[in-house]
Image 1 (spheres, one colour):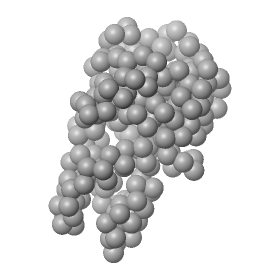
Image 2: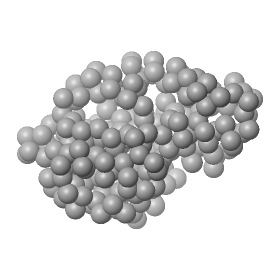
Image 3: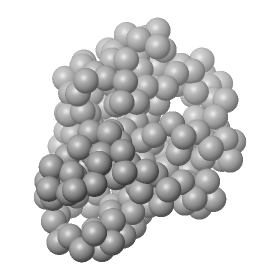
Image 4: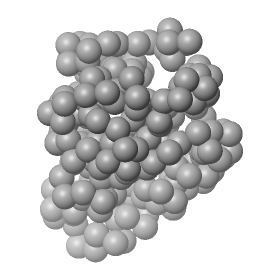
Length: 210
């Protein structure tokens, strides 16, 4: 392994609860019915695409920008002060760094949210490259964001492992020729059998890799 690409939410970050809270507050504030299919569809999307989807799905009168602003303001404080790394994640990143592995991020999250969390958790300097779905034309169901991250790392996909917690991400990474590691997350419990089936390796904790 010459490179390693990590998703953030649900993979490196114990943070899926943030988006559950943001989604619930948004639906409640706008008096919209909870729809599990809608919520699941948001996972692999970036901010802008998810806001476009939400506006169309619920036929909302507000603009896409207003939806993004509302989500961002709710999530920012939680990322700045409460979101933590998963158990063993920092130690594993440090291990990869010592071994000369180039480390990247491929995320649907917004830079202004996750950069502060990486800095507060003391791992920001361990990453060599960052790619977000807002920089590519398709969601994580496709390999685009992983290929962009690998390009920025300067590594070949076949020698670069992708760490993901959702089926869509694993499908997209495998389509790009990447070996995959499924990471267990309590908020993806319903998807666990599919994640285990899709991933080349499945871990419950990063401590298994130390």
